[in-house]
Image (spheres, one colour):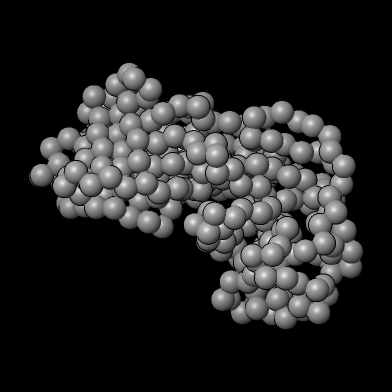
Length: 273
């Protein structure tokens, strides 16, 4: 079996031998119907006892499940079945025949979330993880003014914009793509730094950075131009400073069917018109 790790190394491993699986489903009608069909197929166990979690729904529910595991401090591989729309992080629905065999033959792809260290205007410190992206957004009709640094070097002294975001490969097809950011392969070891409606500098359309980069945003003129920070679904208002880096110690694992071509999905998304 092919296993693509976060380091980008490709190694051959033996097939899995998972026996304890948990099943979770979103609240949509399609997901609940699929859950009812699968309940009698295997002897499912609670999530707390499982080796793998089978996730029924769309990308949003997959992210919700991954965050739940991160918050509980027990992360196990996740195998998704797409019962939503895009399903970039999911597998296609197929016959129930050999369902367990498919999971045991699956390909592992490791993804690491962003860790956001944020300081608000009152001096309070906050830490959140983001699997998709961290975005800074203006809170009022006034454009935001943000200093952008990569490592120890200020790259943009004053970005005048509606906002700016940093997306992981897993999140590059979400908000990042809507903001005209690049799509990143899941094993690319890169981050997308994408402006949102940038007014100045006009010709700057973002950057692709190695995922070892530390990215810092400092909000300028914050009293007049307040900015919020959103790590996936978690929002902080009145931000002063945000620092971002990959959380290597909280790596997640997604399982994909053999022959599930992520490269083809990535290419196809870039030709959607």
